[in-house]
Amino acid sequence: MADHSIADPKSPVSPKVWAGLATGLAVAAIGGVISAVTPHTFDFLGPWGVIAYTAVTVGLAQLAAYLKRDPIRAVGAAAVEQIQANNQPTLEAPPAATNAAAEAVAKDYYSS
Image (cartoon, rainbow, N blue to C red; front, side):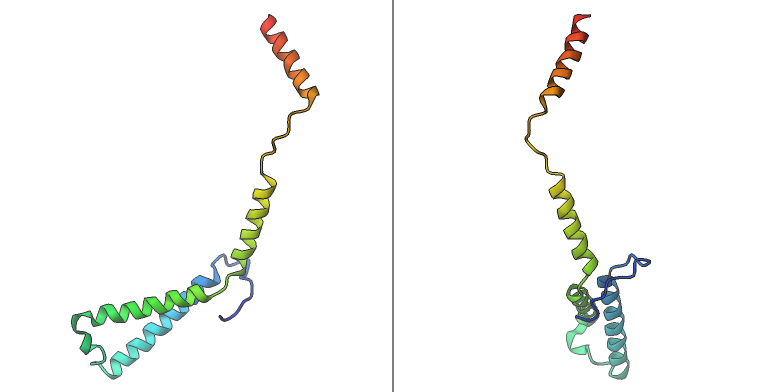
C-alpha cells in the first residue's frame, strides 16, 4: 500500500482509481515490451493468449486499486453514520400544549 495521504480536494478522483490506472498502464507496457522482445511468449496458450494477457493486466490493476487505501471514504462513512444516528426518530409523545392547541383548532374547524 503506497501513499496514504488524503486526496486533493480540488481533484474528486479517488486514489483507488489512480492506483488502478497507473498499475494497469505499467503492466500493459511491461507485457507489450515482453511480447515485442519475445513474440512467442504467449504461443503456448494458443488463441487464448490475448485473453490471458488482458486478464493479467486487468487483474493486477484491480488488485492494486483494491489494496490502495482511501481515507476520504473512511471519513465519509463515519460522517454518514453520525448523520444517521442524529436522524433516528424518537418515540416521545408530543407536549401537552401542542395537543391542546391542535384540539382547539380542530374543534373550531369542525364546529363551523
